[in-house]
Image (cartoon, rainbow, N blue to C red; front, side):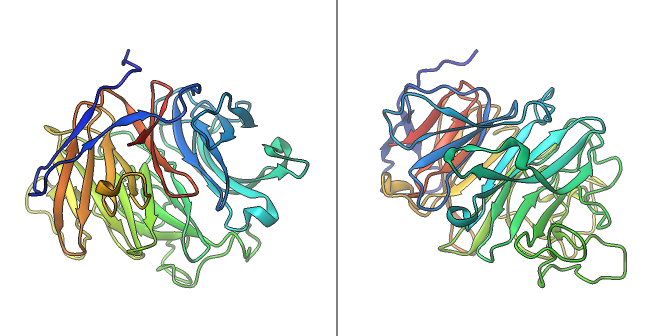
Length: 376
């Protein structure tokens, strides 16, 4: 098992000439423990945090370091399957008008048949710290071919639409070639207009979705494709960029800038290298990652956020991400053309499964030792 305690972490500059500041990663809420936390979110202006446990439970607590307990906000264990590392309750997103309509959205894996479910719930109007389990409205569901590569991230964009990341569903090597198949929702980045249902569905298709009204049988929900397992992505409003950590297979982990209409290569490429075939693949028209690293460095990228908080000025403007397997954490700066530095926080000794932001855009790391950490 991993140690709960954490030593001082030093940022070592990989390609940066400035003096490396000292940064601590410390427990943010020392009295709280969670069971396999995989996501965290907060509605705009909220003084509460909501943590997703993979088993199917969302817990809520005040955004204070001295928080003593985390109440159950929603329990979906009766409809969630979480038997594998990549199944379960995987994503949470609050509606931009949550303060008025009480809507929030979840992404979970359900059994019999094995499938992904995107659903909307309501809060109890008499208890804002308690959702109504019976208020579920299924927005979208699709079959999963295996227990891995389920994706799971959801986030609302500046356009008010809901974005969803889907993996290729496994098993290895994308054997069904779904990531490049635009008639499949697997291996994609989806965009749904949940505020304006249309055509008998609980969502509409945004006007700028690349395959809206196509006559080729492509799914109009698709915003981008060619992804393997976009476990975590996030939007940076200052640069208007979507950052994504797409988990690789045998050799390479990658960071992509998601854009509508983009083809991010899988399973023609893995990162910036050929995959099918291993040499001589045609990369014409493919969107290449802005950064990648080999499995000599790490084996499972955990996408994070561009830091826009105030507590750690040294990280401001850097994209913070991690590797689940070896516990390394990086702070990468992308200037719009190239990565100008990629500083390393070494030896966290944690299996970091996700990152999250509070309403003030302070950044947290969620680890499978059950703690939530903050940067200081």
